[in-house]
Amino acid sequence: MEKKIRSVLIANRGVPAVRVMDTCRDRRIHTIAVYSNPDRLAYHVRLADSAVHIGEAPPLESYLNMEKIIGAALKAGADALHPGWGFLAENAAFAEMVMDAGLIWIGPPPQVIRAMGDKVEAKRLAQKANVPTIPGLSDVRDINQIKHWLEEENITYPIMLKAARGGGGKGMTRVNSEDELQVAFAKAKSEAMKAFGDDRLLVEKYISKGRHIEVQVVGDFYGKVVHLYERECTLQRRNQKIIEEAPSPSLDEDLREEICYTAVRLMREIGYSSAGTVEFIFDSMTKKFYFLEVNTRLQVEHGVTELITGLDLVSLMIDVAEGKPLPVRQSQIKTNRWALEVRINAEDPITFNPSFGTITRLQLPQGPAVRITQGVYEGAEVPPYYDSLLMLLMTTGTNRNGAIRTMDRVLGRDLRVEGVKTIAPLLLSIIRHPKFQAGHFSTSFIEEHMDELVAMFEEKNTEDEVLKIAKYVAKISALGPQNWM
Image (cartoon, rainbow, N blue to C red):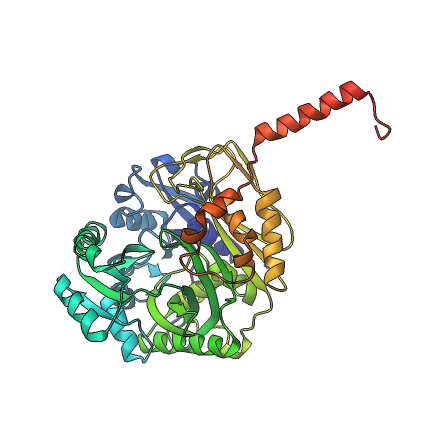
C-alpha cells in the first residue's frame, strides 16, 4: 500500500543531513533537522524547514540517542525518518523503534540490517547465494583455530582479523607474521568489544594488492532489484575511503557485468529493499573478486553513481519507502560519464589528526562539471565531537582524464578553506600522481607513497597572497605607472 511522505526528520548532521535535505526540497517535502548544543548554528540546521534540539554535545546524548530522536520526530509531526549515513543508519533496533512509533523508515528492513551487520552471518548468506568469498574462518575464539586454518588451507601471511560486527573500516587488524598474532588477536578482541559490544572475530586472507569495488543496488517491496553499476573506492587512509570514482578503471566490460549481476543476485537472495551497496575486494593479479560486506544504507560516495546514471538515490529511497515500485528497469539504466569524488576532511594532511576551530575563509569551486555537498559555511565552527567531513567535492568528464583534469583545477586553484587544516593537499598530490592517473593503484597506495605525496604538497595561504600583492605594489612604486594602467 502506498503512503505519501510529506515531512521527513533527518537523524543526522552535517554533510549527510544536507544531502538528504537537497532531495526533499526538490520533492517539496518538509525537512526537520535535529541538533546538539554545539550544532545550534550548523549548516544543516540553517537549511532545514524546522529543527529540534536533542541534547548535549556527546553523540550518546544526542545523535545516538534513539528515544530523543524519535521523540523529536513525533513532536515535529514527521511522517518519516531518514538516517543518512553514520550514527544510527545501520542500527536495526533503531529502525524497529522508528516503525513501532508509527513513522516510515526510509531504509532497508530491520531484519536485513541485522543480518548484514553481522559479518559472520553476511558471509554465510553470500556463500548460500553462490557469491565468491575471501578464504577465511568465521567465529574465531582462539589463536589455535587460526594456526590450524593456516596450516590446513596452506594460507600464508598477511591475514586480516575483523570484528564480526565491524564496518566503515573499523574493527580491522592486519597481521603480518605469526610473531604478531597473539598480541594482534588480543587487541582485535578488545577493540571489537569496546566499539561494537561484541568480541567475536573472523579471520581472512589479506589481499595485498586488492582493489575495493562496490556495486550500488536498489530494490523495492515487490521483489524488483536493479544495479546502478559499480564504484572504485580503493584509495583509503586507515581503512577509510578518501577518493572514489565511477565507473571503475579496474574492470573490463565482462567483469563489470559479472560483478554487478552477482551483487543483484545476493540482494535478491536476502530480500533487500531500498538503496544498498555490495562491497567486493578485487584481486588485480588474478582478476577475481570476493565478497566483503553489504552496506545497508546510503553510501558517502553515492554521488558519483548519481552523476554517471542521472538517477537520484535519495529520491528512489523515498519512492520505495512510500510503497511505490521502482520507476526504472535495468535496461533503462545507462552510464554516459566518468565521475570522481574527494572527501574534504578537517584533518592534518600528513598525520590525519583532526583539526577543529572556526572556518575563517571558505571559497567553493564552481563550473558545469562540479558538484558539491557542503556541511559547513564561512564562519562556522568545526566541533571536536563528530566526524571531520566538511564537504564532498565531485567532478565529471566525458572520460576519466576529463574528470581528473577538472578535479585538479578544483583542488589546485579554486578551493580555499582557512581556519582549519584539511586533507586537500594530499588529495591533490594523489590525483596528480602518475600511477593514479594511469589507474595503477591498490588499497595500500597511500601507505606506500606517503613520503612522495607529501613532497608534492603546494603550500598556499593568505600570507602568500598578501606577499604577492606587496611585491606588485613595490614594483609599481619603483618603476612608476605601466603602459597598461
